[in-house]
Amino acid sequence: MSIARRSPSELRSMFGSNLRSLAQAYPSISELSRQLGINRTQFNRYLSGESFPRPDVLARICHFFDVDARVLLEPVENLAHGNDPLGGPFLKDYVGDGVRNVPESLFPSGFYRFSRRSFLDQGRYVLGLVWVFRRDEGTFIRGFEARAAMHSQGLPMTRDAREFRGLVMRQEDGVGAVISRRGTMTGSYNFLNRVTSFENNYWVGYVARTMRETAGTERVVRMVYEHLGHDFGLAKAASRSGGYCAVEDLLPFHQRLLQPDEAFA
Image (cartoon, rainbow, N blue to C red):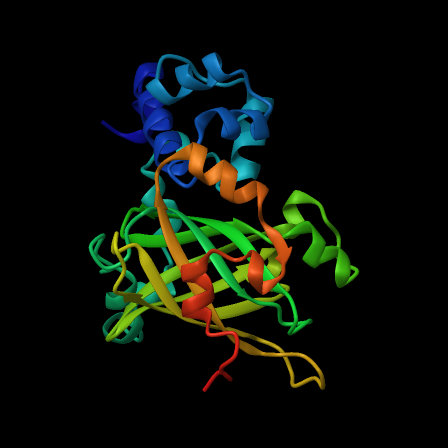
């Protein structure tokens, strides 16, 4: 059936399917509906294709997810990848395949607690939380900078300003991730390799900032990722402990992997 002749039920079904795909980037439907300002029960009706939003609510949803009203008409992956430079002929065999083939066994989805030395103060460390998820053919990272870190640099501490997102790619000896704040204001490259541990849930590597050389600050430091799985309670506890801390406040295995007394090489 042509787009022009689709029935209301078909449009609701397409929208619900696309909304479910977009919602995969968020670990909690309750939190997502709160951010959108939509009643949870009503949001579930949108997800199931039972109901359709008013024009003003549709506009709010489209703005939030950075898509257009074609979410009514065609699968969201067509909107997201129609002009995907990674899938084009120039980069497909160099970057595209690595981006589209990150097995769960190599880097599983879920929450991760991370730790690293502060870039600005070598005597302090940063604890944080990220969410890793799959959507379509990609593996993505989403998280928020610590408020204290933003404040110390004189940067805005709003949710939008603190949010960062990234794209994970397979590497020969682990995974790499290109991560940026909104508007590519700042960015980093992360490399992580799984290390032997009791629960096989630790990765260690480094993070490199995209910035010019500055006296007294670091541009590359070791980083540890600890996979917490999909337990929202563990994630909330890890999030509450996020921010700056002293080395002795780190979990023992994080301390061991970060090697605070050894220079990064």
